[in-house]
Each structure stands twice: as structure tokens, then as C-alpha cells.
Length: 346
Image (tube, rainbow, N blue to C red; front, side):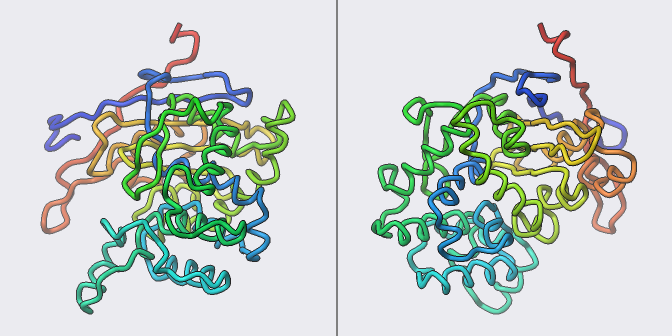
């Protein structure tokens, strides 16, 4: 971050890009660094939900499926969408076990609730959509709803199995810990994140065996739902995943994870648009949420994904400004790195 022309602080991180075949094309830092998937796991594990026919059983629309893969802002749009799902499934929101920490993320909504003396419920938690998917899965399969967050609950076993298949791993080999919302999270190499999002972006193109071919219908449906309803994946404002997908409609599928993990899949939607996977991790966790979007935007520029019009649309993310109380710009975050080709990494 530069203030008055002086470098005031620095963020360190790792970035990796993989090509259509999953091989590393460019990177900076360590592509093999171990990272926690956190919420970047949501669209990948949702495969189990779709494969089991739960989305069809409850007649979920694309926006409704998208909010199940989301880390949403807790805006009324998200609450209305989730409530509609719960009513159709005849499941009470009181069954949720995700807690209310930091809910809602959207500050306008949070201020309105505080002004009205309303305490945010769990439905406004950023992970409530994913937790609803577990409740619906359990009801559809006849499993108990209570304790759905426990590692040995059938919904969590199914999620873990699907995630492992997308990653090309065995479930028993996945390294786990507990996420902030009370379910397991998974630790993998950064390059594995990039490859998983390549598979999400181009399910058919990456299907080279029977196991990966079986994933194509569900991954395609999840990807298309996220790209069709980006505001349900994050929020209507101040959410990078949503802004990126709105800026490149039908071209990218983006999902971040806590502690500054970012994953992006590039969809081969037109001639000259190759499939690719991208992942970035900021080492210090980027609690100000300024480094991760700046690094991601700059990396996508270097990859040729973002041209001048798109960079202008994402300027506040690319070089986030620091302002004084009167709104004058007094500093800015400047991404300063160059992705190195694979030949230079050896």
C-alpha cells in the first residue's frame, strides 16, 4: 500500500495459473503451498447435492442453486431466496447450525437491522445457503437433520466424497480442520485449487476418464447457476466474486475463501478463449480485503483475460484507493508482481 508516494505496507502471496490440461503455465511464489479451501469448497462439494437429485426434487432455480454455493452478504435478496427454498422443502430455519458471527456482511443491511433493533438470525450468515443444502439433502435422503454439521453425518460424508472426486483424491487422504461455521474445511495445495476450478469452468473439456465424466452434468449445472446469478454468490455491491462475474458474464466462475484465498475458473466460451484455472493466496490473510482482489485483477490482466474496458469497471478492486474523511484519495493499493512462465520456474 502506497501513501504519499511511500510504500507503507506490503502483502506477500502466491499465485498459480493452470492451462486446459491442468499443467502449470505461470506462477509466482509457491504453487505447492498448502492452503485451506474454506468457502472455495462450496461449489465443488455441492456436486453431491446435485448428483443425488436433491436440486430436482425441490425444483431449485438457478439463483436458488447459486445461493447454496455462496458466501452471501446477508442482504434481503439472499434471505428471500433462502426462505423460499426452506418453505418449499418444509424445513424450518431454526434447524440451521451456522451461527450468526459477522452476519450480515453487507454493512447497509447491518446498519438497518441495528437501527430497527433487529438481531440478525442465522439465515443472514454468509454460509447459511450451504447449510441449507445440507438440511435439504438430509430431508431428501431420510437422514436426521439434527447434527448435520458433524463430520460423520451422511451429508458431510457425501460432500467430502464429492470434493475428493473433483480434486482427484481419495476422501481419506484429505487433510481437514473445522471451519468458522462449524463444518469441516479441507487443506490442499494451491495448484490443486486452480485445477479444481479449471474442472468447474470446463467440466466436459477436463473429463478424461470415467470418474471425471460422471462429474460433468453436476459441475456444469453449478457453474452455470453461479454465472447466471453472481449477486447471489456474493452480493449486490462490495463483493469481488460478484463484481468479477458481472464484468465478464459467462466467462468466469469465481469463488473466494476466508483468509484471502481466491479461485477463478475461465470458461472456454468463444474462439480464442481457452479454459484455465487460477488460484491466489495472500499469506497474512488480508483482513482489510484489499490485497486479494487487487492481485487477482492484476493476474487476470497479465493472463490477457481483462482488457481496458474490464479494468476500468474493476478499477476500485484493481487499485483500491485509501481516502481521507472528505473523500480525497490519499493512498492506494498497488499490485506489484509479474507472473513467470513455467520455463522460468524450473
